[in-house]
Image (cartoon, rainbow, N blue to C red):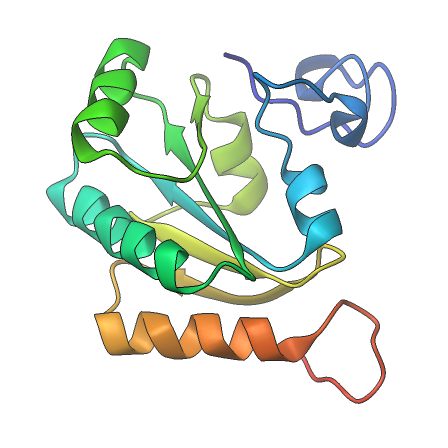
Length: 158
């Protein structure tokens, strides 16, 4: 249940081992996602209707954009409620759980949802604070998919 944001070993509350080194089928490893390609990461509150509706839109977008990975992390809330929500909504992307707010603090989450559009390699291209309209979401995903990997020549970030 704990979120690991450590960049090196023994960083106290951040984690015992570097986060990117933790690999398992039952672990949502954000590094593993952005190593393969661009990622849309949604940070959300499970009891917010606006957040869950935005994640429904993300799920629809994920089906249209197989070249982009999608993932979400529930910020606090009750784990059983999050599991029920994921099951009931039938989201196709992985959903993690931040029970103590470590990831929310690392990303500076202040509004729900927060959508981070991350290029392959890990640099954040864009961030949307609060729910955005479907067309705006689609435009941001299209721009992310077209941007290329972090550090690639001839590309620009945003």
